[in-house]
Length: 540
Figure (cartoon, rainbow, N blue to C red):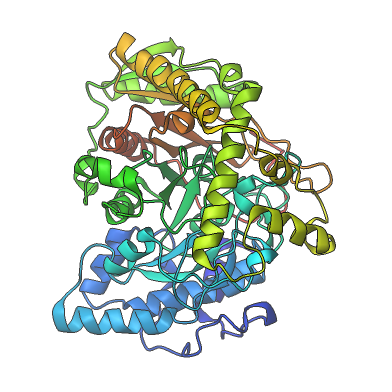
């Protein structure tokens, strides 16, 4: 089915919830005189906001449009399976925001804008927060996460929760990205037999398929930038400490960060500003709140590459000739835009950060963090610790472990012998190698504004039997250092999207947004997916 056919069906079809969504569908959803046009797809947040200001659209009409589209494309049609649960109050929230706009005016750029958020981010409403696990399928958070508080205050409409790699892809080394026990498998909209990557797979696919205006994902190492690259959207992993982690199911307190995902850099910038702020429940934000902005759209500059010094990292292992060509084309574009290119530069050898002792750092942090989260969220629940989770999975192995096990959970549970001093020593060394002696040293040596490389190779074929066969990604240095990283669509390989990465030192988001926006505006590579059964193997 062609894209226009999908859009017409999404805009005009009667809305009949599937059985799986019956309990979560907004009960007041019905006909609206403000029908959202099919051309709403690929609209930017600014364009939608302008239409609402002029009275051409309402938040309710936009919300209903996306809910119909989720039903038509995500639940039926190509069956992307990106959205794990819908907000039953979404239409009422949109109505209230429309009334507020009429009576008092909009709160800002995000007033009435429908978003999807990842299923590991707490919402104190009728939606659940489960990290994709059946162990938490009835879990209702006692309070909003700080990020959700900020988004609600900005006037966003939370459409629902997005599917994800269960436990942020920290359950097994043999996992399939984008699969969770609660949500099943999320599929890549560019080739349905290929992987959407993880762990923010549902957020990336929801954005790529125009199921929402924008989305929020989380990253420990690659979980925003990889699915964004592979699904043809923009994703920004902020500096650790710029966006609060409180109320987000943790993996690593030293690397975790929530971040925006959207179809363009401007929308990512708009969403990022709404997410920042000092949170007393996350000390890292309190220490660094003076380095945050509430408006990152001020850094959008079409001429942002002029005079910039860009270093090219060619360390992505096994990067094929097609990706090399995309990188070379990007370099040519940046040169023509007035950037000085230093090619190549060396950041940090990937094998250094993959040293076996560093695996213990994540295992240690996951156990401590998850136990604390479960105890704080609901001390009386049956699954109140990592050990209880392991036991739940064993009792429910048919549903929870049909394809892969929980070897990473078992390893994390065994981290009782690791002392805090040993953990701190290993974590400090790992961060120094990636940060001060890695990214920072490279930037200083060549007086660079940012480092650029291909984010990852194309999406791999999904294999539930043996697990991921993913192409290498260049997320690790920035992730381990806790530094920001943005990826922007840069090209296609056999119809599969390829992203270009920009990363630099801590709190360099303004610089990265400026550079990425300039590149995006010059190239305008993104195209919406066609939901093909497989890749376009007839031509590159």
